[in-house]
Image (cartoon, rainbow, N blue to C red; front, side, top):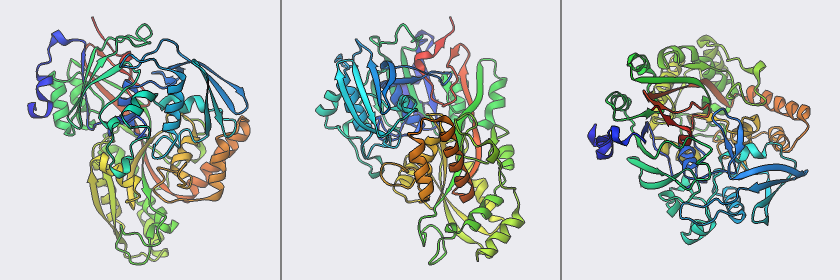
Length: 520
């Protein structure tokens, strides 16, 4: 244990009550706040940086670095910038930093460019006013800005990081291991995959708005489930974001451990590569079995999500028939029904497609991102084996897994997707739109549909609610009928804290330690 956690945790004591020792199975992929749109990475970034608009613990939106916002013209949003805010180095935060940050986040290779693809220009009106011009009316722009971190323009220029890190290529830049934000915590030290230490920003603009009781955060990624649990039980940790579901009953029986549970804004599913005529990730020469919809449906029929829920997830998941959580706008309730688990029908479909003897295929899977992700993949491999699809499991850390998806080096893969805008447009924009550089950056399936693209672009600027809902409903009809992804389940949150430590549960699975507190 000591080799994993190091001396920093070993020295923790009651005298350091304001230090919060936090662990989960993986680390932030980078500190560059615009490089990777990925939950744990965004969580770290949003402790160091602020967005213009914050997502509160109840998922409502509230002022961040902007104190107010309104659409002053059909395609112009006005944001009033909070006065008196400084970066961690003491320099002033200005409207120029807003323009710089939005332009940086909206430009390749930033992984956030899909988020704000409607932004055409950021106009600095004066020191405290910014006008954001969009390609059309954008009713959800404030929601889209909740994950866009503001950076220091001067610091970025000084350190040659005016553009975001190209994560997929493995690029290193100064922002990967350093940070300059206005957020509630400053970076004290960073040792990737080992430990990150943050200290409270006592000049934070929100000192009177949030408890801010956590003075120091020691974040330790611990990939081993048993080691994470042992560290919590021994008192070496205060908070575990992702306690293993197989240990929850044991933890709940402990008198000094609390488990907070709730629905997460995240769906776990399988992506199927449709784009290539001859995929290199299977043993079929000259063809790509998954390009045939009958094969995709056969694989869907062969996967028993109820058994995964019962055996792998110990009941702590919700099987689903769509890749959208039920609390987002446009959730297709009438379509949220899984194809029946039916091995006989699966074999019939394979035979109709000419694969009655099955085939071999590689399943790419993370092993440190989602709850029991590798175990889910192992279960899927076993189920597909029942219909003679032999799965070669390629399980690896999520940093490599996401690079492979970004580089389109996957044929069949597991992915989880949250919806931070709480709107269906986000799902379609990233996962279903044709990958054209501005949209579809996480669409590793190669799915491309002209009508879908048209709908995605229109729903991003449509302000008439009824018309927009009709667009979203039609897009979901297309998505469900094409079987581009195989949904498995909605993830359920289980946060474990030591007695006396209070970390408010959030449906986005992004703890906000400015709001955490300690019992007296």
